[in-house]
Image (cartoon, rainbow, N blue to C red; front, side):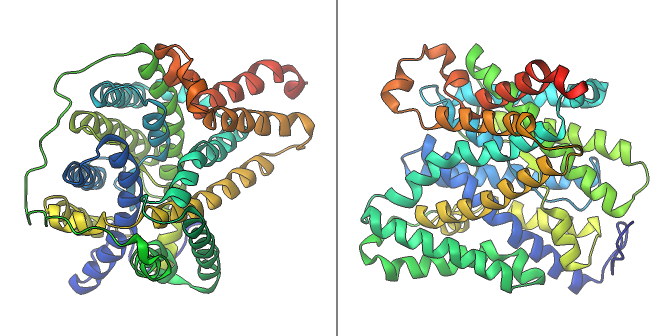
Length: 431
């Protein structure tokens, strides 16, 4: 059954309302870009100017992706942003230069586009049973846990770990409480307010965490520098990202299908094919620019229900605002000054909900959920977590070519889930 909205898919809200709705989606999108971008920018760049440039390019990719999806892709009111699955792939590829990593991102995007347009993806889709999807959702959280732990304890390196950890716990529980108390757009944009107010409270909690003043970046500057113009291929990195792209495609599929079910638009199959093809092309573009690739987010239906506006046209001004933001190092620099402790706390809060959805997916898959089914879900998650927490000296003993695969908890967990679901326990499930 479709919901009733004040404005439907093809409606044109009055200008004032359209701008307000666009600002709301802008307020939802920017924190997601900053959170993912801060982690990867810090991984690649030690120079503040380089980190700002990374955030600029990431914002630009999301702006272009939104516009292309609305005009030529799924043509649905779905927000897009950096993929947490690809974030895991980047973090697991330490030791390889950026060109090698983003060449793999571009290759994965190209194959996703090809699989969408040729129908190959419908064959691969059969591998992803509800339990495999549950493993994907839970694995993302567990394999990002080491990075979250680093952010909420070490922070930016100028405050005691116990002070950082205590603040992160208070802030995280505060977000859970606010999530329960708030409603409507306040709930949808909670992360934005936490980024701003949390940063101020952090300075009061840990005065030693004051950031050293740096030269102000320019108001506007080009972002077409440090491009992946000389592709570099490494088999291990490429295989690792191809497995990540399998999971990304399921995430993208879920986002588009959920809004298709909510709105019942015409030509849902065409929207699905075109939407996933645009996601693939956007990842090719991301690889060229040297940044994390985007994906359509599954949080869109909740925001649509909160705003009562399902018009796709309001995403055009949202994309334009993101485009303007991407061209200003000064504005991006302000957004990027959120302390690492705040970013880690928000990521912990967001991924908690993702784990909950993973458990719900596993339990609502249909049929009994016994020891066998629990093993298919729990085994890969535990294996992936063990790999994710490997100490650096042990990780270094893995052959360099295999590090992006055997050292990637998400990839190892995914492979384990597929083996358990489709090989070891296949007969028992069908019997």
